[in-house]
Amino acid sequence: MSEQMVSRQAEVESVLRLAPVVAVVVLQRVEDAVPLARALVAGGIPAVEITLRTPVALEAIRAVANEVEGVAVGAGTVLNARDFHAAARAGARFAVSPGHSPALLDAAEDSELPYLPGASTASEAMTLAERGYRWQKFFPAVPAGGVDFVRALASPLPGIGFCATGGISAQTAKQWLALPNVVAVGGSWLTPSDLVAAGNWTAIAALAGEAARLVSPG
Ligand SMILES: O=C[C@H](O)COP(=O)(O)O
Ligand SMILES: CC(=O)C(=O)O
Image (cartoon, rainbow, N blue to C red; front, side):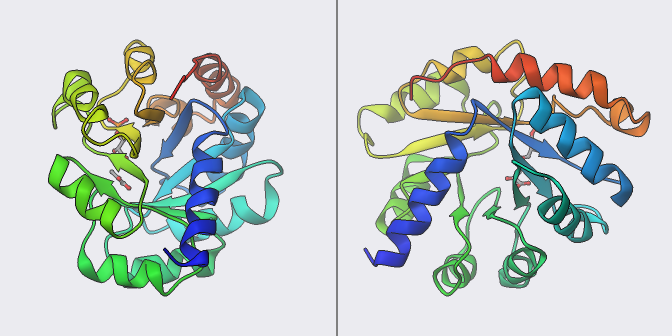
């Protein structure tokens, strides 16, 4: 594996180990980005994935990267090489995808930006491991097989650590974090759209606080 790949993987690991939960955020208004990220950081959740699902996402990433101390802001829903480069230009510290494709893996190899690609089967996880990706997003975690499925991957694929995301809640996060091959979970439950729309940053900081108190042995 190239030295660059080793250091980008180390960076992904360090982001995933900042806290038990990566906040997955869908923003409708760019002006919400900075106070929202500050609330998450204040609650103890510094890893924030802003999904490229809305027109304001890149501007939001730029604002958070420039203005929020202590945050590790990444771009989620990176679907192609163009998204990948746009995320890097906006100042994202990492990029995340629901799956992966040959073109995306090529773009990631040509870039400095640490990358967390998605997998949801043993074969996909093995394909990514062959390309040097020890840290992977297991997505969509619940519909793709749930806790039992991911637990069953731990023994045959001991080198792979997952950030399980998709369908996880405050109530179920603990079960996921107890798996030896789950280093963190991702989820949107910390930033419900009604609280974001209402600008209720205090409530979001409280949800982040609860999430930060979860523990992962992975
Ligand atoms: O990674 C992105 C997912 O949409 C987050 O899933 P969730 O909304 O079920 O937490
Ligand atoms: C689902 C996912 O991985 C993403 O939006 O990045």
